[in-house]
Amino acid sequence: MPKSKTRAGAKKRFKITASGKVKRATAYRSHILTSKSTKRKRKLRGTHYVATSDEKSVRGMLNI
Image (cartoon, rainbow, N blue to C red; front, side, top):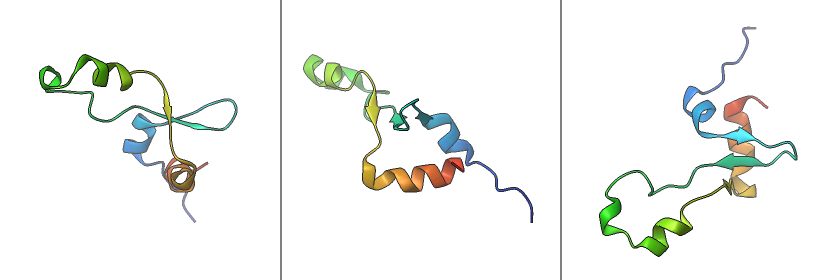
């Protein structure tokens, strides 16, 4: 049976931390930023984590 391939899109979007959590970027922070408030843009910064309910599917995409 051939090796299972990692999903290229998931490989680019997610990282696994040392504690085992799945890091992700925030949505709505890439373009049309002039219409968004400074407060909203500030809240979208920083590290966020994948919800525990979605972790299983993300790990499946990453073959972990």
